[in-house]
Length: 325
Ligand code: HEC
Ligand code: HEC
Image (tube, rainbow, N blue to C red):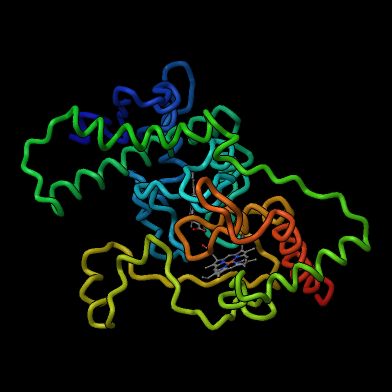
């Protein structure tokens, strides 16, 4: 069914109703080579597969050496986005990640690549992710729900593929609803100092929960330590013995997740105030780092003003460390 709908990662096919550009996909797909007109193809295998795996399952040959592991695109979840809770990333979010990399992790910057190559890679990551979510959907049908084979292709398209494809299009079609655009307040020095002071208070308030994970001074040493991202949670049993037994179902061992130490000053989603604001506002998807701002149907825990104050406080912790060095 998967091959019928999506072809293979080497020879992709776009299922009906899915808005992906097959020409771009073909530039990224397959083995690294130049075609008869000199156009480079196989970009994904050349630049990405060693970590993210040929099928985008995040288990490429060197994945086991990295912490955090490379993203498994099949979950359809991306950490560093400008979109509200539960939404897919925008094209620009993926572009920023690919161009800038994710500092503090194995994800390198691909800034030197020409724009056409980056566009082809963004398209291909979306393709692998939609294909991957469909793969997991099919597995669940067959294994968990004991769905009788053969499956109807149309029902797989309607119930498995199209909802995922629509979720990818939503933030592009209706950014007002899905995308958060930070409007940084212009502050003079005294106002910035006041904002940092207010941010410190919000940080320490129980409703923000920041201290619980990031610790009283933002060193990533809060009392909550047993944290895992959504890719690792299924590997965690209640007892150690259970965890050991579960491990044989997974290609990569269980990996714990640490809250960020702000004093180190390395921000994975970017270190500009706008980046930190987004991280606090929409959270880090697929991780215990919560969204503090409003999202459709949810009032949010903090106001945009409070989130700016927190942003400046977090950055002040990082800068303090710069000065000490
Ligand atoms: C050396 C290993 C490595 C290579 C090569 C690599 N990545 Fe990554 N990538 C990672 C790691 C590790 C993460 C996860 C970081 C994290 O979870 O914070 C990641 C995460 C990502 C994400 C998810 C971002 C998010 O918001 O969740 C995308 C998209 C991505 N990589 C795309 C690519 C593309 C496209 C290429 C090739 C052009 C590539 N990566 C090459 C290691 C790599
Ligand atoms: C339940 C635990 C938890 C709580 C509560 C929490 N965080 Fe986090 N936070 C995390 C984890 C875990 C990460 C690292 C995620 C990753 O690397 O995948 C993180 C990362 C961050 C980052 C780093 C972003 C980057 O780009 O590197 C910032 C900034 C941050 N948190 C701020 C806050 C603030 C401010 C609060 C309070 C409003 C807060 N966090 C509450 C767990 C938490």
